[in-house]
Length: 129
Image 1: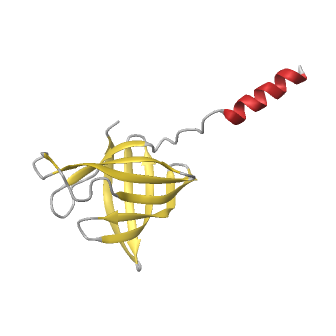
Image 2: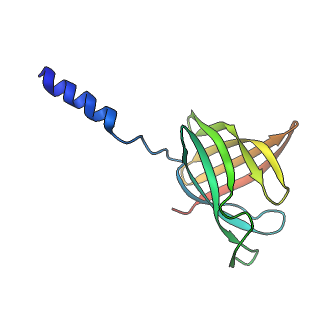
Image 3: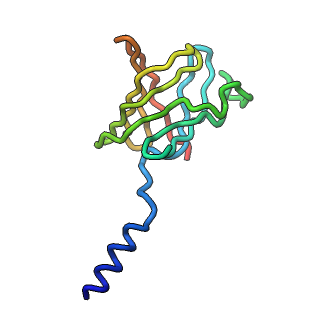
């Protein structure tokens, strides 16, 4: 029985880390220029980051953005209860980096950023996959 318990503990230590519910691809709302994008959120070491993987113009047509492949979210931490913070969010349309907060509610991700006490909503993003 002891041997079985030791094997179970060792197996749990070698199991892959739990995939966070926020992981996946998210569709942003339109920015100040009418463009939107797909952000792939995944782990970056012990933190959470998001990379722009696709860009769309105001008509929904895909185009190659200079920001594709760029981290737009980094150093986020799961604070529990669907709340994420402690990281940064970059807004390409304003060329600004904000202290970010994310709130996950099912297939919706509410994004907010603040810089020098001025906060901006990044809107509610929808899960793509």
